[in-house]
Amino acid sequence: MSSTAIERILRGPSGLGTSGLQLRPQAPAAEAPTAEVPAPEAVLSEVVIPDVQAPTVPPAPEVQASPLPGPPNPAPAAEAPSGGKPKSGDPIPGLYHHPIAEPDPARVEALSLKIKAWAIDEIELYPPEWEKDFDGFSTGRYMVACHPDAPSIDHLMLAARLMVAENAVDDYYCEDLGGSPIGLGSRLLLAHTALDPLHTTPEYHPAWEASLAEDAPRRSYRSAMDYFVRASTPSQSDRFRHDMARLHMGYLAEAAWAETDHVPQVWEYLAMRQFNNFRPCPTITDTVGGYELSVELHALPAMQRVIALAGNATTIVNDLYSYTKELSSPGLHLNLPVVISEREGVSRKEGYLKAIQVHNDLMHAFEAESAALAVACPVPTLVRFLRGVAAWLDGNHYWHQTNTHRYTLPDFW
Image (spheres, rainbow, N blue to C red):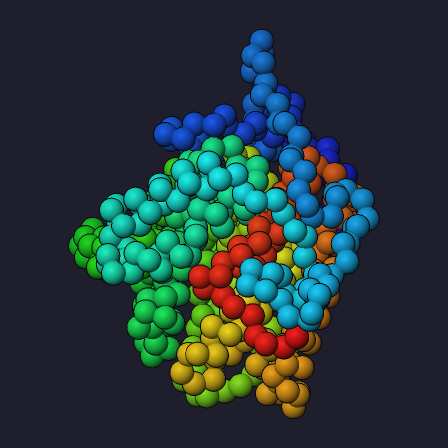
């Protein structure tokens, strides 16, 4: 990133008609569980009104991730428990992570009740017989852990609805609940129009509109996105749409390999996982926090690299914790340990342990480059966003580690 670009960003708006503009972020809303979530103001375009007290942004809450700005301060990788074997709910031995405190139980309970009411009653996402699995996913605990600076339950609901909707698309279209690689492109395209609306002629618009209620994934995408659009700025909504297009492209690559029984090279698998990953979740951290990272700051190449590293690392966490669960699925289920084992000719255990090291390398790179970016461009919203992404990674690891309803570790220690 050039010094000229940094100076221009720090200087704020300039040019004709911008003397009344200031670089000043919007404060998060107060706790209001039943209120409509207001859209955050655009950081670089707030007009100063005389004699009106401008809101201020409270300091971003400290998280367990490396302090920003400044050099990273990595904690040691988790050690294998005494006796060698991890117990149920223990972290993966040797996996680099930052332990977090137990999420606020009152928030977890409130969010769990609201997200279940939305999924089961409002959009009829799952039939009653799948209620136990929905509860076992622990969405409320997941989102409270990942978004410690969310001002209210309604802000957390923005993330929770999108998480549940994305998981439903994966289940229904791709994997657990009857998904198939055959015809996946068509299903994903039509579902994507619930996020990125079709602009067509009056004659054909009603048929498309009706199609959005035809299946559970489309209903969930449409409803979750409607709530998100009302609470976010246009640039935040557009950012999310692009991240979801990336996700769907990754789904299609994995489906193509499944149709042809192709086992990719390790680097090819990692390329697919850069798209088929959790990126849409941490990149809405500013919306959930009640502020906005500007388009210009989000688009910085250094920021894009940090976001990519975060998404890649956190997705390998999923590969590692879901490894045993995926072994029970029919056929050869691709994940990083399996691909390393197949392509590099090592045992399953060796493949798994090497995948841990890949994750750790990505995490160290994420933390080092986050800290460097915060020092190079110390805009308050940028630093807060980096902290939010780091907190999301920590919360995501916590959820995988503690979700013993879904995950058990392999017997490799």
